[in-house]
Length: 316
Ligand SMILES: [Zn+2]
Image (tube, rainbow, N blue to C red):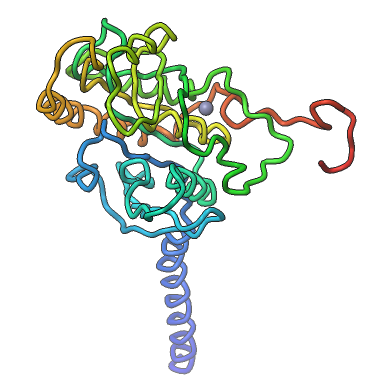
């Protein structure tokens, strides 16, 4: 009996050790292999960039990615209600190198997100209300856009040397209808301003505010709201097959429409930020349960052959 007991003890110890290894190491492995597929590309709708999510999210450090187009801006990993996501400050302007080609930080930002395997992204900026029916603090979940006098790389695939072969990116519905629906649903739960559930963005790139005549021209072109960065992001997301939607907002009535001061805009941004950050975080928490209806609208239509020869077999 004594002998038996002595023989069992090492086996029991071994079993206990193996059990411990399995139960300790497995969660660590899962953590290490956890794929992050959601990103927030910061803009002025989300306020002062370093404060994004303070007191609401868990912050898990930052890193950069060496992309085909160069080093990415810092990418912050965060977590909200157990769902991990990446956050990029102010359209990727952080750490922007001097003498870089105009708009190149958009290319490195979106190439990094693509290389990381991001499939869903949110952005948002404050802008000017060309539409005279909009007011300070209103939210705009836009459904279409115009790029005007663009001075940035037009095509992120070409700029970064990314090949998405035999995929046709559609611009019939330039912003993901599923993510837009989610933003509208969450925004309607308590946002203090009005919510416009569709509208046309115009993006120009003047490095300044527009003139009254330019705003009148943009109104004639069919635009409701003007801003300087989110149009490029919308185009790049679609070219890369990433579901993308915007929580835009009104911080001014657009030059020439009604008078406003810098202080008016500062005050509006504070109110917008307080309302819009919780909205986008709640949307992030819903992504794992999102039932997609957008089909290939955001990811692109696979095709065979070439544009002019449908039965072309050889690689182009
Ligand atoms: Zn989509």
